[in-house]
Image 1 (tube, rainbow, N blue to C red):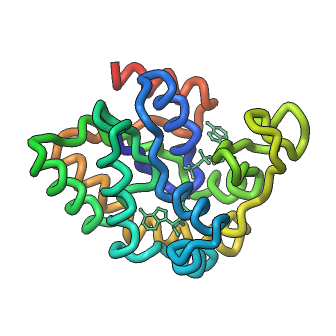
Image 2: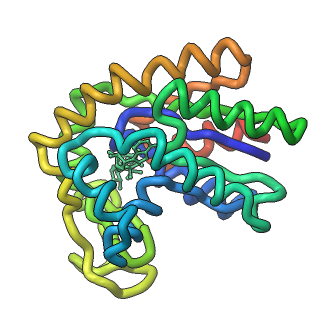
Length: 213
Ligand code: ADP
Ligand code: AMP
């Protein structure tokens, strides 16, 4: 099964993608996580990506598309995957569609996690991320067992640089301009499914499972 998660930054794509990946035993592929791992390891890609990410902008398609296509070509992706944060532009969606077409394949579901802008800034300022294993928490809604420490790997949790309120506003603007058109793109391909992302994370997950089967 090949699934795409759509939605504004902070809508809960990553939270749901991790649960989907576990339930269906498919990899969770997050371009944001790949960039953050590169930043942490000081790679050239990381240096280039950081500039855009810190400004709340999208990393250019030329850099993003290649890392995604390389990742989904790996062996563990042969039975499917859940993409989180990709595609974020129409050209990215077209490249993915063409690459899948060449393999006689296609995306099965594009799950749109719908959360209004008003809720987003509050969610993002409360998000805490583990840069080591990619786990995310929320200081009110989904707190870790021990404050500031990742339940999964014991590392320190941080407020991402790009989750500061001034950057979040920019990211929302970029989302509406460049990513929201993907809703029409996947509606036309008859794979778009929208869920109410303002519900509790377990309810959102139940709604998604009901769609994926
Ligand atoms: P995205 O991957 O779409 O950017 P995340 O999955 O990281 O979003 O979620 C953003 C923040 O909101 C995180 O702090 C997460 O713990 C929290 N969150 C996720 N889903 C819900 C939900 N259904 N209700 C409340 N908070 C949530
Ligand atoms: P995320 O972890 O998905 O919220 O992504 C964090 C940041 O990484 C985004 O704000 C972008 O700067 C960058 N990024 C992640 N995925 C993409 C993508 N598909 N295209 C462009 N930029 C991306």
